[in-house]
Amino acid sequence: MEYNLIYEIMRKALIVLLVVLCYQQMACAKSYPFDMKHSYEVEIVRVGTQGTKYLKVFKTAGSIDKAVNGAMQDAVAACIFTGVEGKENAGRIQPLVKGIEEYNNNKKFFNEFFKKGKFMNYVKNVNSGYPSGEDNVKTRKGHRVCVYVIVMYDKLRNYLEDAGHVKRINSYFK
Image (tube, rainbow, N blue to C red; front, side, top):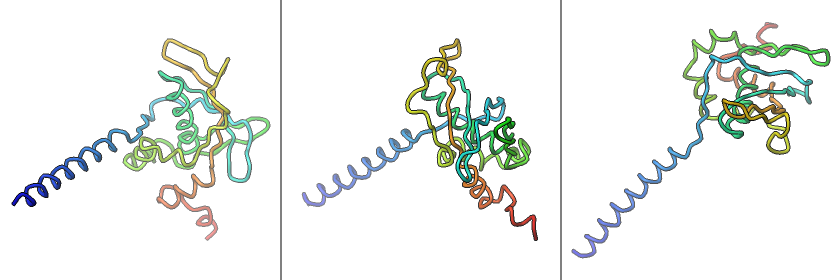
């Protein structure tokens, strides 16, 4: 009888421990705020290596980390929804989807993509550390940073094609 009591206590303790660990894991999962209501301050610097875009992004947020993450998110969002104006050394980046209407028709997909951090698979911060000097200015709203990023544009396009949100390039030639 004593053995059954100890076994039952151990079993319940294990269940409680697993529940606590699950809640802790959910609480620690990183979340990124996302909205379509602001304009993206994104400039093309140059076309990077095959399939990438080298961009300069400005973002203001309460902390430097949030501003840097927000800048990376804005770079990907601009490539998807609005495109990026060209310069003399690099042409315009066409948006991958038809802007806000594609977002409105597929909010669940895009909110999960941006809010759960999946966009981070398609962007790389090329700064060697925190932005400093004129690339990190303290304002009333927090920190305004300038970040240089590389967007893996072709991989992003392939992901959106596989998800059914962008027509495959070869479908135009059939």
